[in-house]
Structure formats: structure tokens, C-alpha cells
Image (spheres, helix red, strand yellow):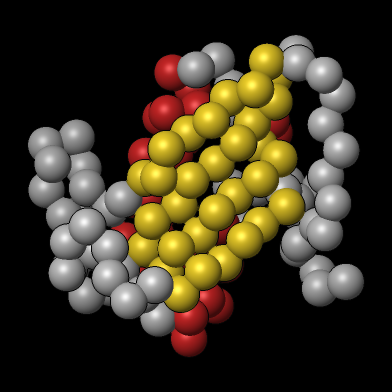
Length: 118
């Protein structure tokens, strides 16, 4: 099994939190990191953090991530940012999908999450 990924995550019964795909827009709706997948991914993970906290969850509760990436060749940059947020001893199950486009041409990455809280 690749380091930093889980093929299966078993979560105890609890409240399930589904976080919609987050994109690299700041609180003012402005794109962060034009042309820079690492900068965009950092903003996406900050947006995910905000959404999780608003739902009473944290990164420790995340059991699944869905990553939608314009260029799968940029996965190392995405993973580097992701590893700053997830528990690498108990990483969430993940899915990576390369997409031909997202909701705007300048958006390079979108990530959604599922968390389970007590």
C-alpha cells in the first residue's frame, strides 16, 4: 500500500459531514494562485478547514477525500499540501480524478471531503 493513503477506512457510527467540493477562491471570491497548483491547493485545503470547523468537525474526523485535478502530473504538489492537513498515521481514503475542466478555466484543483464526528 502506498505511504500516506488508505484503501479502506472504517469509521465508528456518528454524524456524517459531507463537504462540497472546495475551490481556490478566497472569502471575497477571488482566485488564489493563478497558474500555481500548489498555491491553489493550499487555498482549497484552507477552505476545507473552514467548512469542517463550521460543521463542528476537524481534519482528524475526515475519512474520505475526492480530488479533482486538471493535470494528474501535478499530484506531488497536491499531496505535499494535503500531507500538511491529514493524519499521516491514519490517512483518509482518497480518490484522484483527472478532469478536462472545472467550473472556471483558471481553477486547477477541487477537493471534497467526508468526515464522521462523534
